[in-house]
Length: 80
Image 1 (cartoon, rainbow, N blue to C red):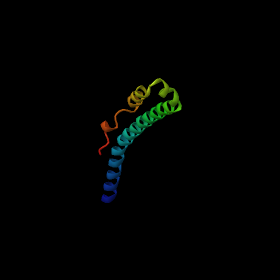
Image 2 (cartoon, helix red, strand yellow):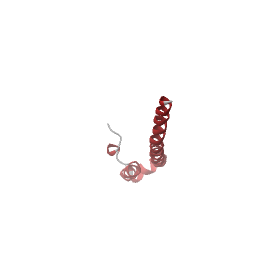
Image 3 (cartoon, rainbow, N blue to C red):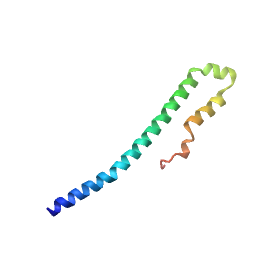
Image 4 (spheres, rainbow, N blue to C red):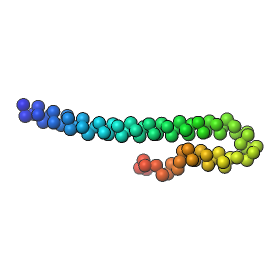
């Protein structure tokens, strides 16, 4: 019976630890997917209107707009 108490204690400890971790990973995934969706939208718009952008010389404007939506990848929280 002592082993049963230890196993249940470890099990409930893992459950209590994994629930907040799961919520954190879920929110991180949601924010990542939102950023990826914005990036896809901006790049699709820019590539679809490439002739217009080049004819009016707006490449730098679109580059800045894309960087604004994406951000600087070197400033990521993910370790290298």
